[in-house]
Image 1 (cartoon, rainbow, N blue to C red):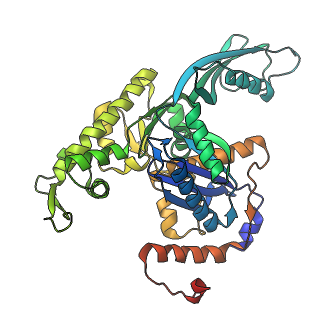
Image 2 (cartoon, one colour):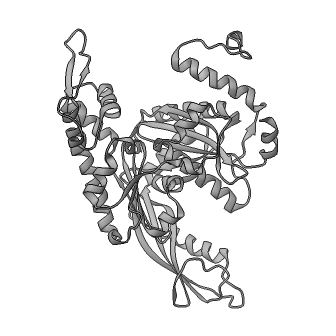
Image 3 (cartoon, rainbow, N blue to C red):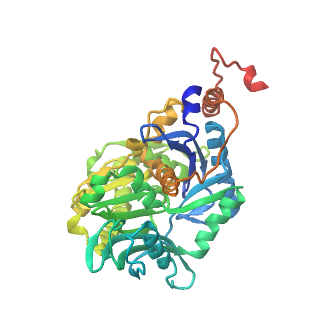
Length: 445
């Protein structure tokens, strides 16, 4: 393990930080030799200061960020200083705009510099008060009235035009996220829209070319991104997610919030008719009260009502985009909410489009560094955004051509990781494990 680490240590190490409504997740990784993503460490913390994708309590969010980054840093044995942060929330808006430049030097071909100048001009657009541009994404280019060009670099031309997909957000919401990151002793390399990050980790190039809708169902928000001919065409953030379902169960079944969450994840279904009438789950009563019996079918009715509303919102966004008839690859659902039983069937029923669950595993390299259970957990749709942020960060470094994130490696890797894996299990189970080469006294030092 040490040998391969020495060989690959020049590969830049990048950190993705997903500040979600239910969890804050930091993932440390780099590009492996075969071009896939090698995850070196992952840290999770409860997110108590974020509501519907927006920071509502700075101190609690900073606490969660620090905790997640510390765990990821210890596990990967790197000192984390710079992170790629995800941004979402109802304040996110998208618009189409057209820009053009007239080139003065007619003897040279169109270069990256010309495209960068065109993009830079877009950042100077006058936005409504309190709004700021997050991303400027070029779509098709037009060179001297020749439309539909995807990559004009190397062409000869005077007049360079382009259609842009511009994503903006509230200045205060953006500042709050940056403030939380900075207060946690970190620097943000890039702010990345979460559905764009998720699409990097779960969609294939063929799907983006054919036409596909990515639906990332998180705790507080559902993010939508529509691709066609390999280009992003529409983005939206819907202010409902898995937490809305939990709240409905809490009220509909009159149970505590933590019980409602367990009922949703263990027995929940998006289609009530798929459950039998006689299935009952027993919930312990509060402080000496009788246990409560809840019908699985009634639970599914509560979940289905809210889930149908979320899917209807997604379908409205698809129709608004104008690409409803051009989506050959249908819908890909990801995020924690995508693990709900029978959800793909409900999505297909409401929208009439094919649907599959998106897992971020096809970009992950086989990993012998992380404990097996952690590596398996990474392949869950829950981590689609975190892994996507990592991929986006790596791509940015490769485009710029020099490492932007400097990470200090402190000690030889594998000894620390073996200890951490064991320590993690100790914390999880509360039991003592004794291994041949790591004794109890190692933890008592």
